Length: 281
Image (cartoon, rainbow, N blue to C red; front, side, top):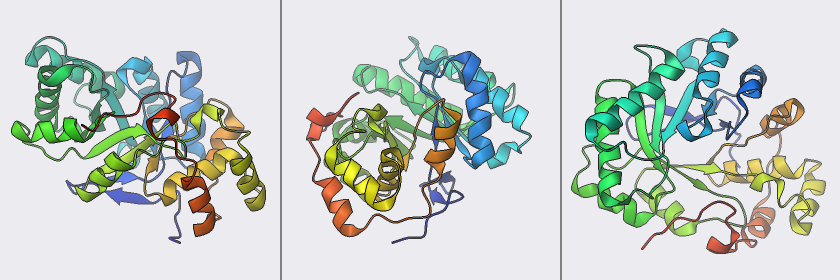
């Protein structure tokens, strides 16, 4: 097994690099988000994932500035959910996020289309606005989230940047999304895993509990390690300081091939999703 560490990063298709482990702040309350991000940075995370929809972009930026870490040592991601009605208005919405996080003249390391739900015209408008942001240096890399094969293939007809650098999708043993995972890996698209610990909904699953006991780890740690060994970039989210630290403590054990097979056997396809399984056809 590869000897992963919290400082590891993976190459994106555009020569940038993305840390192998990220910290999610999905709907982390504004009063809590700064402290959670500071704790995450303190224990070694160098990758924070936010979104316009989460309503805490400003707090992520504040945490980075308060941490004292150099900007180029922390990888920041945000996302846009829907277009704003025109290419210029959508671009302005993107730039507003960048400035909320990093101030005037700032940048984010990765900006994603959060959803495929805006239809072909909306997706095109979003991507072309992201390409402009990317060209101007306000987003080092650009990508998508919740996109299936058909959505990424659709982009070929108009995209100047193709393939997207990242696709962020729901991934865990019960929802492995093998079709889009394989497609992304074949096309050089980094796969990020949101909800990698299934919001603790599977904490009492007998197979998972047995494996966690075997390695003397928590079920959350096993799920994060599983994601790492699947070559996904997991984005666990918690506001509990102890769990923030524990979720980063996943680099001192390997899940055996047999136990990976056991976890793989839990797949329920799209029925196993707690948020969204992508549409591939």
